[in-house]
Structure formats: structure tokens, C-alpha cells
Length: 71
Image (tube, rainbow, N blue to C red):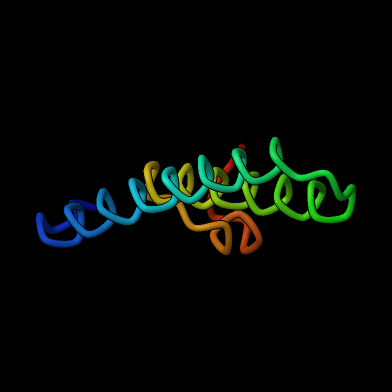
């Protein structure tokens, strides 16, 4: 299935936002002296990277759950 150009551009924009967010959270984790804050920042960075990867590939995790995509 071909993704329309405007959808692809929006996904690319969202990928860049997620990657910038991940970098922000990584820097926050590196600068935090509080373990709980550092762990939260690390988790948020990982989540932002995960979302960027999903958007970049165009896959939907719900497709895996339905069994329509094979890993």
C-alpha cells in the first residue's frame, strides 16, 4: 500500500520531533542527581526512540497483535 506524500511528510516530521525529544530526555537523565528522575528520563527517552522507529517504518504495533505482520 502506497502512503500518500502528505502522510509520509507528517510521519517524517513526527520522527524528527521524537528524536529531538529522546535527545532532550537523554541529556536530562545525564544531568540528574536524583535516581528516580534519572530513571524516568531514561524511560521517556527510550519511549521517544521507540515511537520514532515505529513512525519511520510505517508499521503499526496493533498489526502485530492481530497477527497480520510477522516479525
